[in-house]
Amino acid sequence: MANTLPQLANTSILIVDDFAGMRDMIHSMLRELQQGNKGEPAVVHHAANGKRAIAAMLGHHYNIILCDYNLGAGRNGMQLLEEARVRGLVRATDIFVMVTAENTLSRVILAAEYRPDDYITKPFNKSLLSQRLLRLFQRKENLAPITDLMYASEYLKALQMCDTLLQSEPRNPIEIMRMRAEIATNMGNYREAEKSYSAIIKRRPMPWALLGLGIVYFKQQRMEEAQHTFNRLLAENENYLESYNWMAKLAEVNGDLQRAQQLLLQANEISPFSVSRNLQLSRVAEKNGDMKTAVKALESFVYLSADSIHEDVKHNLKLANAQIACGDSDIALKNLSALRKRFKRENRSLLPLLISEHRAYLAQKNTAQMNACFAEIKESYEKGSESSIALDAHTLLDVADAFFVHGEEINATAIVKHVVENNHDQLALLEDAQAVFDKHNRAEAGNRLIETVKREVFELNNRGTALAKEGRMEESLQLFRDALKQMPENVTININAAQVILMNRHKSKGNVSLINEVSQIIRRIEEIDPTNPHLKKLGLLQQEMNS
Image 1 (cartoon, rainbow, N blue to C red):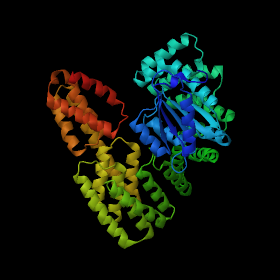
Image 2 (cartoon, rainbow, N blue to C red):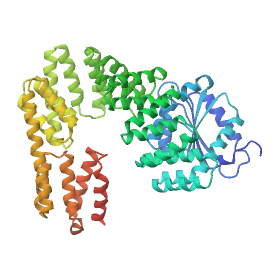
Image 3 (cartoon, rainbow, N blue to C red):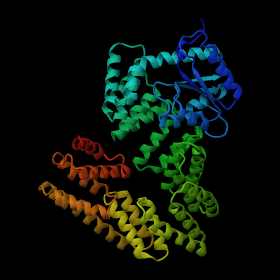
């Protein structure tokens, strides 16, 4: 039958639009495109907004998603796509089409950081919808040998499949080269990614290829080449927004924070709706001491991230702290009061919120409220210390600061010592620890404490490692076990303890106690530092021990 789409058979489709009439019209077109098809007709569901769409995707896998950009109150279509991709609700094999009004298409494309498979502008008819879907089905089918391997996490095989397909002189070489570059980048194989992006650019300097090449240079710390590539990208495509984000990262690495802030502000003038860029801008502005810009960026972030994957109360607290720094303690306290209800509802530790409230009362010189808040801080801190929940290092430094404010120097020093013991090789955190002492005119005492603790932890690690090299495994392991009782979040000590157990893995096979102990240590490292480069090797050795 003419003007039908056989590929729609046995599929699931989600239509996302805030107007019921538009959803019904698209559904009707899809029904007509299936007339006479063999196989089961497509299952078609509707969602009126982003929140309902995510709920639907969590409960059902959709092969095709037709989503309007403007979904009324709440997240828009781009934010929905971003969340769906990040949460793994949309696979590489699926089709995601963004529906937009003709007069907003260029703005939507410019603002896109997560790109859909295609755009279709309203009004459109059944014939145009059929053409777009057919083209996307054919494209997905051509790339299926690669995307199937990616979905199975067989990235090396996916990379090899790209090479195999490219040797067969395909109709879509640029697309396959792009996938090859992206796979290689995700694998950390930056040289191969560089080859693919460079080959694409020789054929045609696509903006996304220039961006990809710049990112690959940045990842390899080839900063001059990254700078040159990003400069070229901006010169040729001044509205390509992702380039501003990476140029700002590069400026920040080079220590030019003013330039980083200027770039992010330029990008926000083109499109102020990027969640990640507003967060990046707030951080850079705070480093620059421009708290008004930081507050404005955080306000945008909190608004844009509401009901999305980015929503996190820690950013609301950052906003309150920035407002306090700007002298707006009254506004901050009003926001913190609303947050307190949410913290209790979600059964969260009140400690970070109490610290912000204490900071606001201190700024107001409201001694009575400040003292009452400090009493709550002490109670919450003691509860946290007694529980198995590890308190965040920066939160602990804030607690120490509050203790210093109230003249409890011994307790404050003990808290900072605990932070240093567990983070003896984290330079930025040690600088923050020193800053707590500097703030309260205890610079010399702080420097002495930090240097003493660093030396003691280094000596302990060296002693334990030397014992292991001498073959005195039990003594070495016991030394690290005792250290972990005092410093359970010290990543280096955890790694060394795991390594000592795994060095003896062949003799320890079947030793349930040691198998459980090393599993617990590795889990702890994953919780504290999930990107630690030692984890992969430890995991492989653990598999040997368990086999």
